Length: 107
Image (cartoon, rainbow, N blue to C red; front, side, top):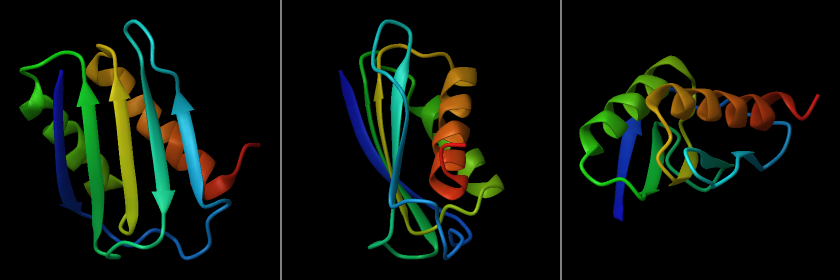
């Protein structure tokens, strides 16, 4: 089990979000859950907390999270990820799904 926390610079989240938090995915074999929470944090950074069952991939996690923070205005959010061995493409998918739920709602 590996756990780490890191903040990434990001443009501020849009001031109006559909709801205060959003969840995408489910913890299970080869999958992960991503929880995004808005508010209560510095507007110029995305705070990330990762817990993964697969040690040794911190550099890959940091690269995926930095890329997301660069391409999506997520400043002021807290991202919590619980992973059970998801591949990098699934990490990006779940981050985007949670972001869409947070900013646009569950349409």
